[in-house]
Image (cartoon, rainbow, N blue to C red):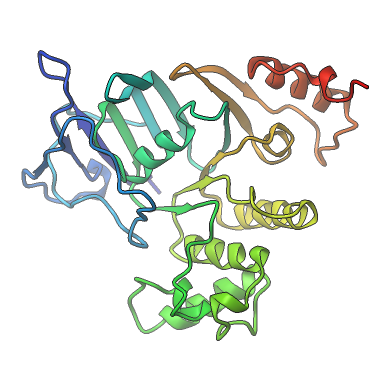
Length: 308
């Protein structure tokens, strides 16, 4: 089945100010398209903490200034992406392709633009230049679970779902993440790991073609993170979405991803496949070699860590 795509296209004016965005459902959907344009103020950003409506998609029927748009079945295709905040350029001509079902990890120093890229792909930030296509059915998981405190676990998972089977789908999603029987739990009653499980269930219950994860396990303790890694891998094997996983943890990237990217000075300075045999062990020489290479690209000498 063809991946349904959503496009943001912006073009710079003569004075290089971002001047608008258009969204497009890919021709494979067969939908009619009436012209619909949203204009952004130069330098505009998403509201802090903004989240997409569950299952949110592009406006149906928006026009396509670029035409064509063949993605070759990719879940993400980015060409010449540029994002600036005032005079500070965060993304500078970035190119990226993520294939359907591919798990890609994104590394970079703090402030390098990792979360900015994720927000753009999620549709939260349209003040951009360049050509950005992303699967219409996409979900986002943040570092914080962002559960509604006045809604029980099941209600958080089914938020925005429609249809008579919404509740049964929500229960099945909770069972899939190991929370069967916890449907009526309030968020305050959940541990950090359980709250993130609910967030994963909420993301996957919609069967997205693309899942965007912004350091989802960064606030969890080490043992819980190991369990969440195994859970995420199992969920991805079952559902086969494309994944962009933002992290600061080099080991986490190698353990989970098919490819690892490093973002430096607004562009991808390294794009490397993970060729470590499964099950991936930190003691594997190939693991250690890739870890050293990634740390070096990030400007870190791994030998400094154990110096006494």
